Image: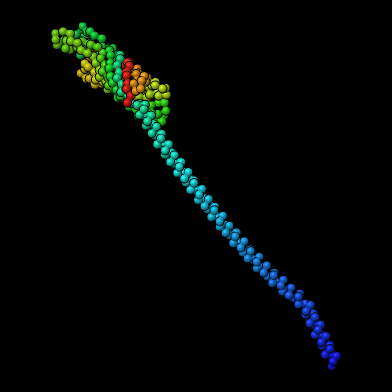
Length: 308
């Protein structure tokens, strides 16, 4: 029995020794397991924080990109607005400069003309002019004479409506009085028993026409009238006792700016007239005893103009 007790005590002692030997290892294993769990938890938290940081960084990048885009758009809008303002200002400056240039140039012109005038055919053997039937002794030269006149040039376009910067378009309004000398008033002479009665052969013309002026040479402007309307009143009346005859006027000339707004020029004009005064008197056999009146005429002279 003592042997059994002794054997049981040895067993107990051996068990205790083994337990004491294994206790540190168990403790170390538990500590290691706890440390591993803590490290895993820390790594997870770090991953979560990193994800949050990445999300925050992405949000900041998106916000920065949006802000930069809005800033760029605002700058673009401001640039476009500035360009529009500059364009409008340029137009205003151009208009102001053109207006100032126009006011300085004073392209409108008031002119006074004078010179030599002639008709294509002399007025002879008419009812009231050198009537050979009533008074064979005709006298006077009524083909050539002189003229005086005045007119206005008004500028319509500095570039003829975009055709050329060196070609201006004016409208001319003009009147002129032409005197072709004296002639025998045969009808009055016949009523006075052959006493000579003198009459002045004259014409009053009112003209309206476009005028093209070349402005590419400083202070020197050649011009041309391609066509113009002319209304002509003659005296004495025609053989048909009519006085008004319309016509087509052509002309060319040049002008020079001698001082400030003072211009001098020279011109030549030709007027084709209609047949409103072209009445003649013929016999039954067709012989003309009173001529028709031909009022085709031309002038050559000079003028002085004042710009305004």
